[in-house]
Length: 431
Image (cartoon, rainbow, N blue to C red; front, side):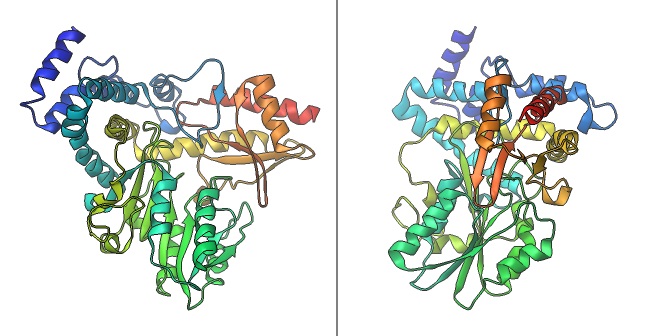
């Protein structure tokens, strides 16, 4: 049956439009389909945030390992089965005739993905570029901005190292000036955060970088208030949205930023090596691309995608990840992720010696948390969790943050977290 179906699709390639063929590929005998998943999705009873049957169903949509509990979804998230199947369909089809099928059929489906991402982001498809990760997205802007010696950039010591290194390279080569904000973790005062940035503003400040959610601790920053403060001084705004896209329920225009970058293989659970860059339409022509197109000063967002051969199957399967995300629902996904973080933090908060770098207040955090144990190195806690309990987390030693980052995703249940809580209590008691 599958062979006949593949034969039909192959013969249809010459006649079918790209979008029709992409739909055929995505439905071509996959073991897991979005239609089936939606049809079988349980109706929540009561509050869906804590509905056990609903979230067990979501857990079974993934292929999570029975050998370890993955509580490091902050690095890269697994893809649901339906996304894996979509990727494999596009990949198998591309391999039947790469030079033709990949460029002339599969590649054209990227425009549909662009529109899907734009719709999810609340912006125009002419403002969205499909890239490989947050680093590529943000460094396109960092290296693409016209800056002169003495121009100032405001960022925090808690920003992601790749971005810090990119700015430092421009500082070293071109003499721009970096102004640093040092934020305590957690911080539960939006005005204090805004003032910490504003204190660094001068007449030479050209742009600020904002981590919408600090990756080390889950601290949510008031991106819109920071953008308003910057724009009032004629300063541009770059937002690192690696950990908020498909995690928090927002649209990019809500932030009123000029530039935004994210990784789609994090909380959207898209194939590995997929990301998105947003550039406000009127800003596109003034940003130089990382890889040069024919017209680097074009106002076409696609100039940022001139990277040669890339994984079209990965990019097209982003569309399926968006459908899965929509099936869960943006609001209830955010609520569930926050519920899981609060579940384990509240269970540990009265244990002697345990401390947190993460707020429990909803306006300052969601699904990502960070804890430590007095007298223990974070790396030792991580090793014990993995070695003794097969629970994978990641230790953090960065600036004023020394702890263990814990990032459950929607396929993690409260029963899973009960095992994690028990393990931490045992480690704390023996530490």
